[in-house]
Image 1: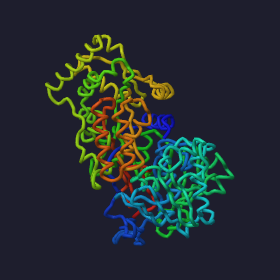
Image 2 (image 1 turned 90 degrees about the horizontal axis):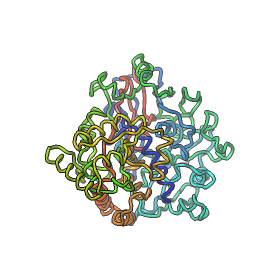
Image 3 (image 1 turned 180 degrees about the horizontal axis):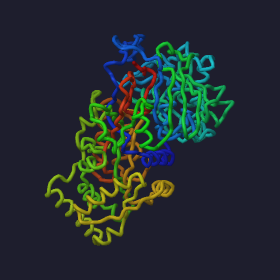
Image 4 (image 1 turned 120 degrees about the vertical axis):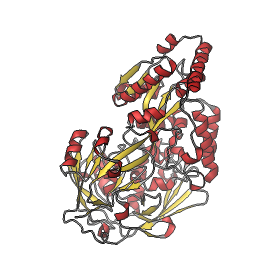
Length: 564
């Protein structure tokens, strides 16, 4: 991947990170009351045709209502860079395969998936009965067109990097090769074969993502850049279709009668309100206007834990030091600041949950050795200053670093600033206070607009950024450390060599290399893990079958139904 492209996107993701958004294992609202799936071939599960569970009657009004906090400019799966908007895209654009909360997959536009032993060839079978909302058939021509369009230089998609694991995808994006040299082939009308540049154990997470849901070729060619920008400028293939869009205000999705599995979709409509006002959301829920409420931190006291769904996602936030800064180039100084940061206290102060303290870059829920959990197996890589002796050690490291530079504490306090967005101000002040208490240094806090801070991050002129972070669209440790390699800000040959080694490996051998990489990164104290994150949702008592995922799009409405 070209470093400039990945770098810009990684930084954008970091700055848009919101702590209330979340980290770690999948949940399903009312799982005991949801229709049970039946096992199919290839590790997939087929949807069940069972009615609502015995003893419960379906409500006459099958409408689900929720809040979107922001509106993205497009519902084009291949160019959308908004996490909030992904749930809408996944509702109206059927992915190649559907993901399940247990990490397996179900048939989507494709019915089968086969991976080669070396994890470099990935073969999917396009179903024969899929239709667009207008009743026309979904063809291989639509699929191939969608992929070519997504990575073409003309489209210049800001998320094109997501498809770069595909052989020659990046080279096509940069104009170095033609599309016929890209690792996407259709040997017949119902078989699509992806070839990846390197072994790609996580490719299944790519093809279950909303960002790889095909769009209708005819509509995209006719609309160009306008595709996905209004209700009449998008053609659905998923369980729902967009029928109304009042920009910056509301959306309406209705059941798509031409969806391949429409018989198993019980909801008739999704009503969406677009607002970032927390009081409006709470008021709407309390008056019965919402089917699900995002329980913000300042609402925690309103609901007991047994009244909410805890939704954890694959995300981590961290402090990022710039090793180009005179003081932060010194490893002893970086380690001193790392030790003096108590993430347990930080998690309790900011998220009201000390269990979300992050002791590694990779959150819980990521695939580890032998299919286990990476974080559980790797354990805590960093530690907090939990006793007086550790605080003293931090002070000694700080003084050693200053002596090596021939500088004083006063020089240090004028040597760099804690930089953050307005949304990260509380975090920055908490950390500022910890460093003052534990090290006796009071670092200034500089609150910046994203238009100022983002260029500083891209150009490497920042000092110490608080509230940045990383999430991933796939359950693999690479998703949480590859960005460091791609950004190129840390010139460490051992690190670069290990990353390149991991790209040639598969299975447990590759996972172990990523464990080694994480330890190397954190032992150098440039990225200081803060917290994993957590969403809390209050789901209305009459809602069943709402699937909530750890990564990628957060909600799946296909199986939702309302009971009396």
